[in-house]
Length: 230
Image 1 (cartoon, rainbow, N blue to C red):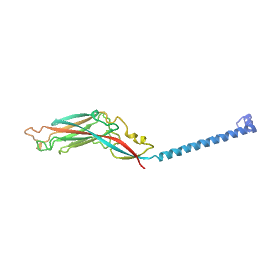
Image 2: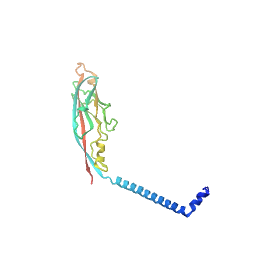
Image 3: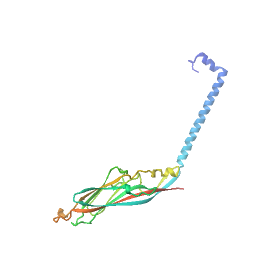
Image 4: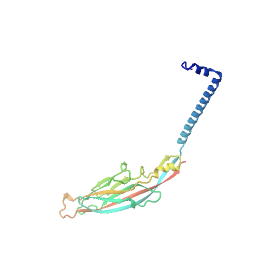
């Protein structure tokens, strides 16, 4: 007991009548603290067991495609922007737009000049809701060997079409990442560039001055399905 306590207080605490209630109060306090700590530790153990015993689920994807096409005739040294309205895409119930593939081809294999023209294509970043910084994207391409240019844009986060395994407490939680709406809203904008090539840079008849270019856009959509891994 503190020596600084008033004499009256020390006298009160040292009496038989005061010691018994004090001891009882201390015992009750210790018991309550012990019970509280036991409950807390028990809750932690139950939570840990619950989290570590979450079942595993296999998630696979059913896919559908929607194809759009544009045919443009470009003049030599021309750049043209072509826009595809993705609101025209028919998306079935439960499906999401996963990614977009673009193929750009020229009309002739080697043109009148007997030499392939140089064609370039670029997907232009705009307000289209997509994964513009995804490392799997291929937003620009150029070719002068009569080979189609292939471009790709990932739309839905982390979607690559591959089956995957996740741990979750139930089906709802396991599928939650694959039910986001709003991805793929907007316009797909593609720039085309044409540089007509002639042998030795000469075209005396002026016959090879343009090129017909076809843009095929394939919108890949997916619907996730789930099964419990035993």
